[in-house]
Length: 420
Ligand code: C2E
Ligand code: MG
Ligand code: MG
Image 1 (cartoon, helix red, strand yellow):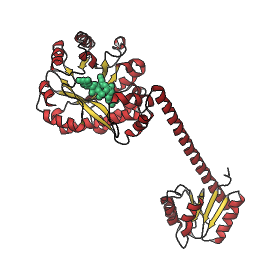
Image 2 (spheres, helix red, strand yellow):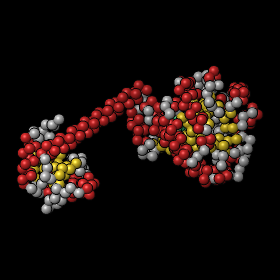
Image 3 (tube, rainbow, N blue to C red):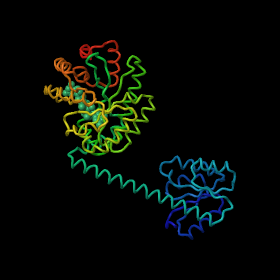
Image 4 (cartoon, rainbow, N blue to C red):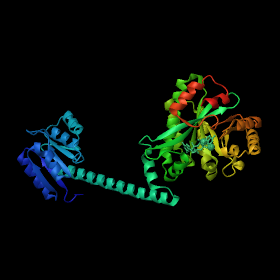
């Protein structure tokens, strides 16, 4: 298909060629400009913005190769396709032609039908590319519009959403780490990776304030990939720095939206391989409500993690819908009892959940231990593992590494609590 009114610039020192090509192309309905001085080609391309340039290779003032590389370095004209017209028929010449950025070449003496066919095909490609770019732009605008509607509907701030979209690229996301302690030995069993957004204006933003926004706009997917990669790389680093902590593991939170397909699984598998980390040292926490919203899909994805060797935890156990009826089906290893139970002193409930877990062959981790009194009661109930401000608040990677250094020899949680 001839693209009407397309503008072609022909640069050739041979007046006869210029005239012949011009005549034929004009006859086809193209708008043609000719130039016999190659030194002026760049200026002419900038002023005329042609859709295509036909460029002779052998010219006295400046070779076609030099002209083409100048064009390709110039932001304004670099996307204009260039077809070389050359008497050279050597393979190396052709390779050089492509290496400086031409899209095609025509051998001299040329057959006019071939010139027309090559010109037409390059103009068609250019038109399709520009249509694709326009489509991509309009999709981007439409996407932004829809995202803003989602924000409106859910009562999120547009500005916060815009900021969150660039937060990852601008290195504003950071993982903090909170130790999970064995009450009997004082050992650090694992670190739970907890996301923080270091906002350039608002400072540190808590995940409870931006994870829901990330979930409802889909940003949780790339953010979740980053979290898992970062956490696994950090564990690998600690494993190398502290051979004494050979059994140390890392615990990562996953949102239900991340379990709707197996992309998180594939990412995790790659990250574990890249860092040479044993999958058994990765613990994945999923909240109870998430498991209940689409239990069948969740079970499928969770089983893939399980087969890989990753341990699975139900987070905030006791706060969501009752998972009791499905507890048997979920391939989880640990129930993490929500910190509201400790905070409200619901010791009987904690004891009952602990007994239930034992019956089901699952382990228990208690969240939100803030005082020695709470710890003592929990130990008497028969709980052995937990985390909370009593031991340590979540700390950034540097502070956590320093804590690990200092606590290497220490084996009691009470001392651990005082130290950090
Ligand atoms: P969570 O997974 O249940 O994490 C425990 C939360 O309790 C953390 O809040 C932690 O700082 C806090 N906490 C721990 N010990 C105590 C304590 O003794 N007292 C009190 N008052 N709080 C304590 P944080 O870091 O604000 O995280 C909140 C939630 O955000 C997490 O709850 C988790 O559901 C979610 N989250 C955090 N990071 C991620 C992430 O990377 N991905 C996803 N999907 N969710 C995340
Ligand atoms: Mg958690
Ligand atoms: Mg929790």
